[in-house]
Length: 266
Picture 1: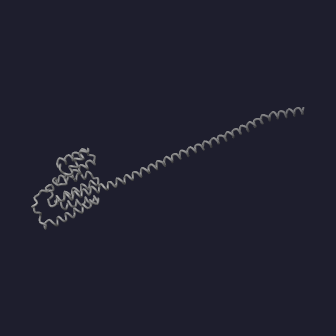
Picture 2 (picture 1 turned 180 degrees about the vertical axis):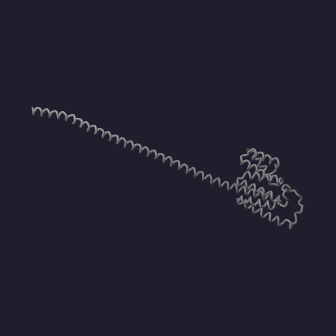
Picture 3 (picture 1 turned 90 degrees about the horizontal axis):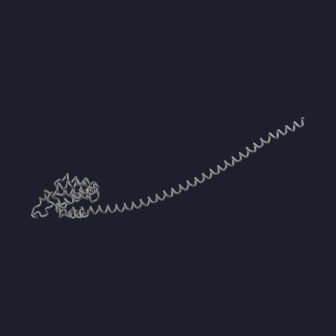
């Protein structure tokens, strides 16, 4: 009985060991497969990361190239604009110089008409030549002082120092309100204001000249300047009315000829 029992027990142990060994084999195989899958996932993830990084690098490179192109274009535009500004600045300076020279030339010619004739006699060059001037002793010092102050202010205008010119001419008007050069001083104040782009101030000053010195030879030019300032302010209708008024009142003046040209060009 003992031998068969031992054989039976051995067979039973073998039978019990086979499933356990099979289960152990199955666990190892599954673990290997899981590890292989994990490795594949890691590899795929690494490949995806590399591809994403490459795409990002490419996008960044393209963006930098585009940005660089835009910067270079902006530099070229800035250089072109600087050149245009330099040309315009030069032309403006030349125009201002020509304008000042024209004003000074006009002032010289008009002062020949105004000299010694009084504040309201600018349009009467036909005055009797035999009329005796005031006694030199009475008027010579005042005339010299007036001319000195006036010329000093005019020099400021010629130099482009418009603020100083305005101050100088205002001092002249306060000191010599009855001077034959008072209308001219008022005229230059208006021109200096215009040069400073104070168009409203220039209009008010020139209108004061027209109303205060209606017979002065500078009135037509003052009206022409008013029309110019009105146009700069966008008041085209007002500018036209001023030009038409100038033509009607002073048809033979040089300013009227310019007014006619402007009206014909519109």
